[in-house]
Length: 451
Image (cartoon, rainbow, N blue to C red; front, side, top):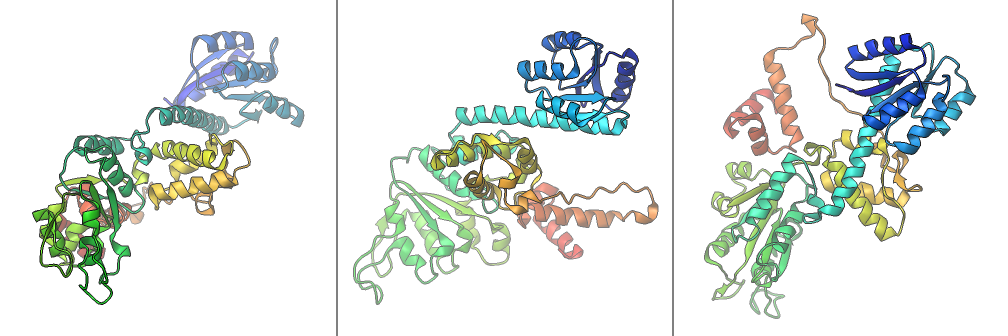
C-alpha cells in the first residue's frame, strides 16, 4: 500500500468518491464526516496523512489542522476546499497544514500531494531515528550504518580485530579505508602499540625503501646518521600501507621478504633487525588486474590479501548517508559552536538521490561546508554545494512498445556491463563479482563491447 489516508469531509458522497479513487491508486483509506470524529479516530489509529475539507459544521479544517499539529505534529494535513482564497490558504498553513488544494481538483494532483506528504513524513521519522542511533553506536565512527553491506563489514572487523593476519582493505576513494585500518588497530590486541600510517604514493620512489626499512649511517650521500624506518617505528603495533598499489615493483620483493621473515634489512646495513608488526594494506586499485598486467607481484598480493575487507561505495548503502550526515553535523556543529541539529526533509531527499562519487569523504566535506554556511537550526538546500543542489538522476527506463525503438540483447548486455564497471569505480574484480562472471570472461566481454 502507498500509505494510510484519513479523509475528513461533511459530505459523505465526497468521502466515498475519494475513498474509491485513492483505493485504486494504492492508498488505504478511512473517512469521517466531522473533525471531532476524525480526532477520535486519529487518537486510536495511526495514519500517514489527513486529507480534510476546510468548511465543515463544528470544528473547521483550520481548527483540525491546529489540533493535529499540537497532538501529532508528525502527521501532515492537506486541506481541500471549494472556497479557495489567499486568506484561507494562509490561515491553513499557519495552522500547520502541509499543503492547500482548491476545488475543482484533478485526482492526479491529490495523489501527487499525498505521496509527497507521506514521503516527507517518512524522512522526518527516519532523521529522528537516525539522530538517536548516532548516540547509541559510536564504535566505528564514520563506519556507522544499518545497511546490510556495512553490517557485513562491521561483523568482519569484529571477528578479525584481534588477529595478527594481514588485512587488505579495498574500495573506492573516500569509502573509509583509513577509518577501517585505525579501527582494527584501536580494537585489536595491539591497541597499546603504535599505529603508523604510510601513504605510499606520497613517498618518492627513490626514498621509499629507506622510509620503510630505515638506513645505516653512510648508506648514501645524505645519510649522515642512522635512521629507524617505519617498520621499526611500528614495532609491536600496526603498519598501515595506504594505496599499496602504488608501491614500486623494485621494492615489492623486499617488502615481501620483510613480511615473510618478520625482519627488515636497513639500506646499507649487513644485518637484519627483527620487527613485529601487523600489516594492514589498502587500495582503490584492482590489484588482481595489476597482477595480470605485471604491475604488482602475485606473491606479495597473496601475502597481504589474507583477509580482505571490501568497503561498499556510499551510493550502495541506502539511507546510511543520512545516518552519516547526522554524525558529521553533530561533529562540526560542536566544533563551530553553532546550533545545527539536523537536515531538512528536502536536503535528506537530495542526499538519498545523489550518487556521491567521492563517497563518505565527499559527504563529510559537504556537511562541514553546510554547517559553516547554515543560518537555521537545520541544513537547507541553499547550504549545499552546487553539484548536489542541482543534481538530477540520469536513470533511463525504456517503456516504449514500438519494436523499432527496442535494442538487441547484446546491446542490453553491453550497457549493463559498462554501467556496473562504472558503478564500482572501474574495479574489474568487483564488477566480475557483481555480474557473476570470472574475470577472464569479463575482460573478454569488455573487449568485445569496447569497454
